[in-house]
Amino acid sequence: MLTLASKLKRDDGLKGSRTSASTSDSTRRVSVRDKLLVKEVAELEANLPCTCKVHFPDPNKLHCFQLTVSPDEGYYQGGKFQFETEVPDAYNMVPPRVKCLTKIWHPNITETGEICLSLLREHSIDGTGWAPTRTLKDVVWGLNSLFTDLLNFDDPLNIEAAEHHLRDKEDFRDKVDEYIKRYAR
Image (tube, rainbow, N blue to C red; front, side, top):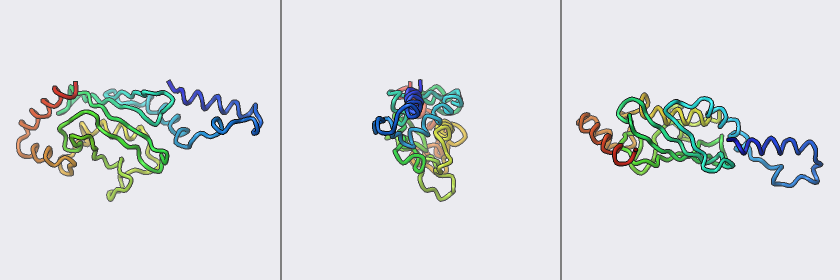
């Protein structure tokens, strides 16, 4: 699976057998981000929540991947929610950019896919935002938790969904179910 990892290992092996004059720039320059991603993707795949699946459309581009979260409990049980993750060049000093591709009725995710998850914030007042010590595993587990224990009606991004829940929990559940049937199967 880790095609980029194989390439990095092959390139490292070639470094020892070639002189610096014969090594091209393309094999010598591997970004810090890509080196981190090789390690982090292996760790992520070994520690993925059972409700999540990761897909790399291009195995040579570990910085672009899709995550599917299929909650097995709570309001969103039975849905399959797609997220697109792009890891910027400045990673791990800045967080990955994540967007929800599935239309959803959720207090912490807008219908256009914006996500309110503190660890995805570069700067956070509460100290739980992004830090260079965080990894992709933290991001995936955080996104997964938005459907269970991090579901937050008190600090919503989608205020209308949060108010709907406060006003009428049963009608909120019905609307969530309708969105799942329409968009998340």
